[in-house]
Image 1: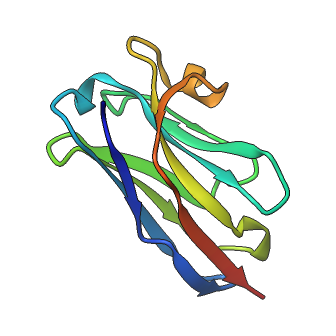
Image 2: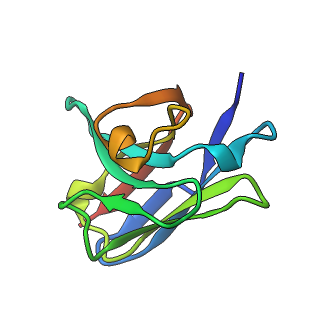
Length: 126
């Protein structure tokens, strides 16, 4: 069973930046699309961003387009979420997600996830 461990969350002022990291265990990281979801208090978990196994394709939610960027380093078994121009409404627990084998980032964006991390809290103050 793969383990996904997020890091990089914290408290930041509006307009600031954070970079989240998700480290995956195992030797098959490069075979899967990876992504990020977030869940604000009292709300459902929403898709944020996803990236294909070969970095050729990314999907970004409209709410963060132009501000957030997803990337990955298959040699380090790590996926990143660079978050710029943060807003208070970006406050949420951010979860790393692994897509289903042989499915791309589009599937992951629609909830096709076979493993979740435990999440990291991002708080954006106004």
